[in-house]
Length: 110
Length: 120
Image (tube, rainbow over all chains, first blue to last red; front, side, top):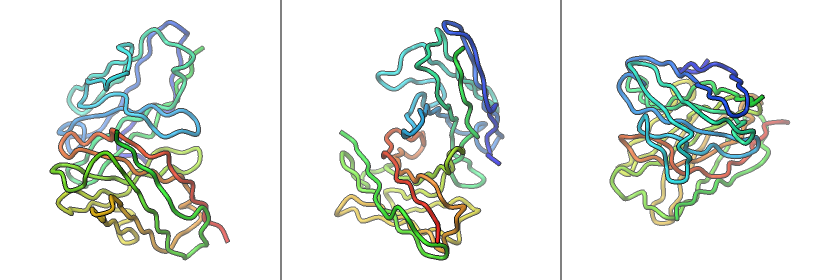
């Protein structure tokens, strides 16, 4: 059971927009930065979003994120088949004093 | 250029101790705020954060595995070692090391991962 809660799967048509939610608590999302990771099968996760809303160099602006209270949301616009992957949210939990992830969300582009 | 690479046995027997090494380059664990984490992922399952060691030698462990895990560093050769005792088949997973900057706490660079299978 993951500390952060994500929907197991989301889907949307090519070219459309999708959002992935990540719910936590005051000891993690509510008080720390959230990051998002993209993972393709058989490969290591890749940093997609850091410090709640920032994109590393090379990440297209089709990817965006926000945070409000104890929840965070990843948005992807102009969906492409190449976006099909697993997406994870992550942060630090100040009560547990350890890193925490969501259970991951599998994105399917129809 | 920051790189990390995990190494260790691909197969361990139940009850044995697993020792994994993360060899990194492009940064130093003597630099303030630098940290290295271990994360694992059982086949078909989610990421699970395991442990972290900081530039000042602070160490953090996931509570459920704290009694079985030990993380250490050798800054002279840019390595972080994770040991996990009493291995069980449920510990079969791909193990990743990843860099963090303390405070923002995001994992900006990851190794490619190493698959460890626990089986007799």
